[in-house]
Image 1 (tube, rainbow, N blue to C red):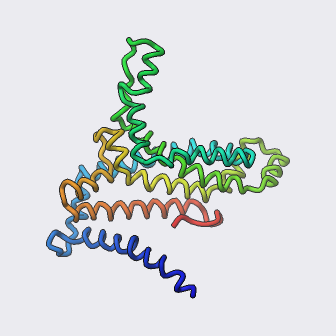
Image 2: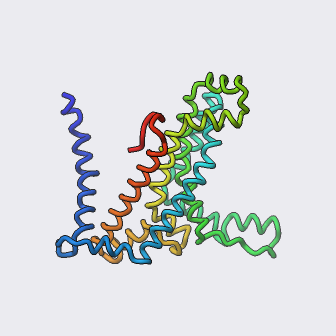
Image 3: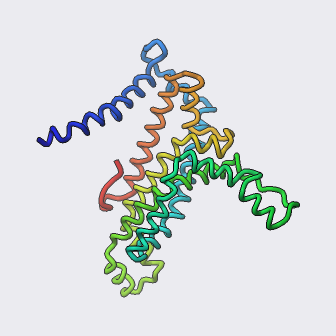
Length: 273
């Protein structure tokens, strides 16, 4: 009976997880004639492609760090609020996610353009002689787009674990002479480490593989791994090289997750799979 109940999940995993991964591996290690080769993997180590991989790692790392810095105090504040207030705050955090990803990105384009809303407001306040701030088509705009779109994936796990910390532990730390800051750094932060790793993973993985944000907010000036892979499939029609890049990207993600799980510690309640 249990096997029958699990059958739909097994079929789903095979069709939509395992099979696509096998196709990626097959195309990554074959040429257009279907012959086995390492040339696709070797082509990735060209200087231009290595620069793209390094840029993607840097952008994803910065976006993840910024999300963590912003999300932790927000999650802590939400966890300490009243239950009804927590529900409202969670809804406000998730509300932008109800909109289409493309619409959210286009909204930031309207805000950041030289003739956009932000510059229009600034010029209205300081006068027309103030030159517009150039914010669109910059690396900062790309990272901003990543932070905005993936910040809820950091807030929700942190709020979940912080809200479950026993208040008696915090009271005991305070009674033993810990200041509020030391309670936060010595008690709350270590107890929430496992969900910090989860949040970091949930932000880092989509950030390093994104492509639409960099195209719209970066103006195509900052090629990321996702942009290069998309170009191989949609423009160059080099499926083998595109699959090889996807394969290397998967390895980078798996190595990153393994490192984060390693430093999360063994007693944090679980690992990221």
